[in-house]
Amino acid sequence: MTTSTIEKDSSIPPGPILFITMVTDMLIGYVFPEWRSWLPFNLGTPPSGLFSHDVSGVLNYFRPLPSYREYLQSSSQGINFQSLQSYAFSTPSTALGDLSSPTAIMTVFVLVLFFRKIKYSFILPTFTARGLEIGMSTHGKGWVIDNQERIVKFAEYCLRLMYHFTISAFGIYYFWDKPWWNPEKGGTKTLFIGFPEHTIDVGMIWYYLVQCIYNIEALVSLLELSLEIKLQNPLTHYGIPLRVGWSKTCRGDVREMFIHHVITNMLILISSTFRFTRIGSMVFLVHDISDVPVDLSKLANFLKWKKTTISFFVTMIIVWLGTRMIIFPSVIVRSVFMETKLLMIENGGIVKQVHHDAW
Image 1 (cartoon, rainbow, N blue to C red):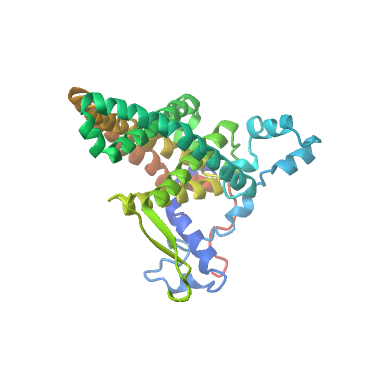
Image 2: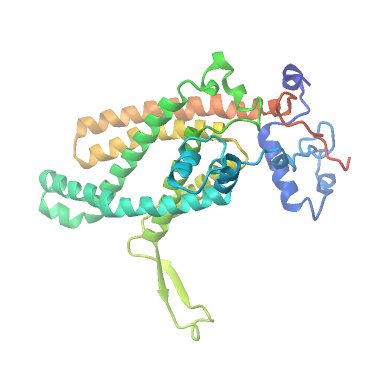
């Protein structure tokens, strides 16, 4: 089957439909393998039914990513700093590239703890002290006393700006010459051609790890700020030894931010597990870039720089429209819906019977 044949083959549904079908097979397929027969409007009837395709075994086509121990065995090296450095920073397509692997989970856990230590012992105290100085000079002592929470938010937005600017700058630099951003080199079709044999470069591995670490820590910090856990007598409270409630520092948008962080972390994990890091990196980049002027406008507003605030606000609207309303839907979403059929090409792609065996 050639690329042109696949692009014209209307019987293969868009990627999101195949993904929903795969998840359904994984969740209920073993218990109820003929679930397609219950779908209305011939949705499960091959060859044209949207949910008639079987992609439940897609993970079997992924080549194993070596753990650190397997890397040592294959390279005949011992456990030392040099081999660890080589594995983490010089070797592509390692288990660090799959965030569901034990190697990546342990790495993320350790680095989240390390990041939290730096964040609360140095970064936030430094920005908070700077916020107090600025608040005293621009608003006065009385305002500082009455607005401690705003000063804490100022420090948090400084951290957000530092992160979004740094990760965006790295993303622009690292992905500048990648073929999926360049139509002359194949453009978004390269997201799928050759999948799942794409090499996960070291830069991509750490780009994903950093994104994962930041977003997991953001979720943990949100829960830490919003929830209060107290011990209670289990004999008088139906055998429950802990009571969980809202803390005094809980903010009004906690539910929205909790949903946002949970969905973000789920998408990071899923895209990494299914080796869609190229697509994931594109989504990361357009969102991170648009967050920079958001953080700048909020900081300028804190500083009472009215003209600067207006300038950053206008910039935020322009960048937000360009990245999230134009590039994201017209480039990334379009590719996900229109070009995922390229997964079925024979040259390095997934080749399998795409219709359910029961039919």
